[in-house]
Image (tube, rainbow, N blue to C red; front, top):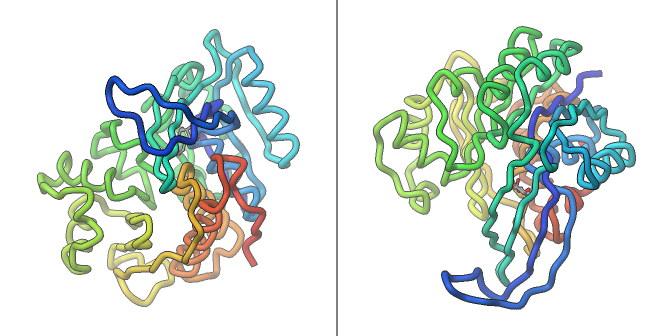
Amino acid sequence: MNRVVVAGSFNVDHVWRVPALPQAGATLSGDYTTGPGGKGFNQAVAARRAGAGTCFVCALGDDLGAQLARVLCTADGIDLRDVVVQAPTGTAGIYVDAQGRNSIVIGAGANAALQPAFVAEALAGLQPGDVLVAQLESPLDAVAKALDAGRAAGATTLLNPAPANVAIDHAMLERADILTPNETEFAAMLGRHVGARVEADAVSGIDQQRLHALCRDLTHGTVVVTLGASGCFVSHADANLRGDTTACYRVPAEAARVVDTTGAGDAFNGALAASMALKPERAFAEHVRFAGRYASRSTELYGAALAMPRMPVE
Ligand code: RIB
């Protein structure tokens, strides 16, 4: 059976629910919770809970955060391949407002010490048909090594270029068979790589052919721009429609009773990877629709990894 293999970050999330996101100089009171997160781990949990055999490659400290990662991987049946380093396990401070929007500050900690050599060793078992997933909360040489290992093994490589403040070069984009920016990340990459000035909040309003042309200017692979409540936009190269009948299209979002959008992008990526791994015969649009449904459900619960629904691909 094809698997999802995620190389990336694990964080202990510290979360405050507040009426409004804090302004400079403000002191607020909020409801506090803590739980597992990190884009890599959230994506691995989503892939697993969507029914895929899942491996997660990361760096952890020698501390309680690392124990949390191990306990959760065992509980969910995730094959954890970790290296223990001389740094605290990653952390994130997250504020969630009354509309479910968030602001996040990352303390990379051990995630910053993930080495390419360890990644290569941990990914030695990749097979054709597997889906290799990476994000940008790990050192870029480790991310590049993970994507290269995926390519070399004949796996599909999926890069979620998040968070938006991490700049990557064009060679990194081209390592991804599938690139999944949100509108903020897409706008940042267009500015950096295409020389197109587009505001993030204007992306969802751009007409379909223009969006497709921008995606084609950005990279050779498939691009899925996630647009929050506006769903997502898919753009393929003509040479590889991935089973679809058209090179570009929009997929609307599923209605949801949103309480917390933290990790919704991670839910989408993990579920997309799981669907591709488990049902490779399906058209790409079906994988995207499943991922959208999965991500919508994740926004109806508080938290990041623990908000991933148990919703297997059928
Ligand atoms: O995408 C959400 C995640 O971003 C949180 O879990 C936090 O840890 C940060 O990595």
